[in-house]
Length: 240
Image (cartoon, rainbow, N blue to C red; front, side):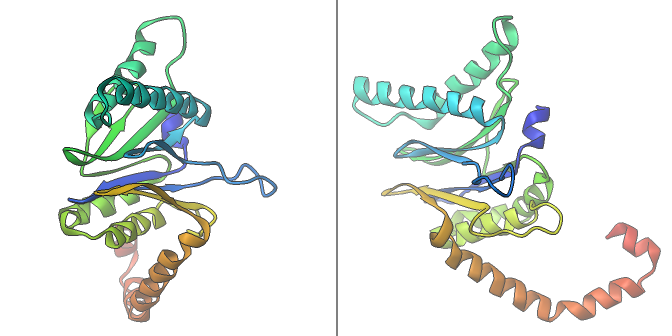
């Protein structure tokens, strides 16, 4: 569980027609590329990871096999609920046997199947939760707070609006003076009549530009508020 808390942030949310995953990618050094945080499992399922990437790749490989086997035997896409339950059992099995250590990774599953959009969260302990929206990883609390505040409006959101909500939630998870860019940001979308799609790099930039414009408009009236807060005394500053 501790390795999940220290992994870079990952969020997932859903509307009535789409599920979206957003993730912050980390680079080990300035000379290395950013690590992949969102993995495709099937045309209708993707996962976001926080924790040990090697463990996540092992689980992703197993999940892909499960989806392929289900499609081969039954001729239809695997229901997300069944995959999430099987995945939780796989997590939990390692906590009972001495053969191997538990998987040190938390997963967010986002999908769209015959029952509609889904978001699931799994833990190394074997727990699984279905959510309207959730966030895991380092500094994910600010993202979770944003999602809690706005989750009631997600149901009627369009695909683009849902992506913007994901990016706004991610902005609060960026460490220190860093900012969300097309290099360290990653978004994936799956929806009705829309296969799993990863949005990164140049494709993500228009959404980030829109986010920057929003920030600029908000800050235009924010200077006076900041001055008032500074003049408000130490108690107010502590509360802020």
